[in-house]
Length: 135
Image (cartoon, rainbow, N blue to C red; front, side):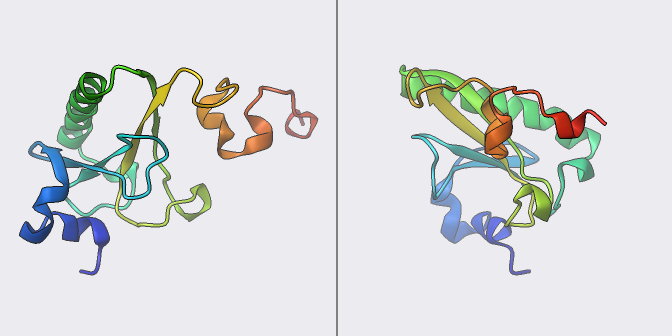
């Protein structure tokens, strides 16, 4: 299999893994949005969040919480997080192995963070009423 995230699990890439449990591993993003931007990646090759089994769904919360706490210990300027998944081509997924972005945020890192993940469609981030969606 020629999957980038499956390759990271191989011995040559183990130094990139910052944490792992039975179902997932965590690695820092190669193109971070902010310092300590982390990817949570299932060990099993699956494309979509919706393909996870019940054990993986329970396990992902454990690793997200562990990484959150670790990042806060490493950098006391972190005050919040964005958690995101690009699930499918039209949502921006470019590596077809599920991965969850844990993005640390800091006070003042952007002028107005209100709307957060809604910014994936920039003109929808600020909660302005969209008449075209009212039909």
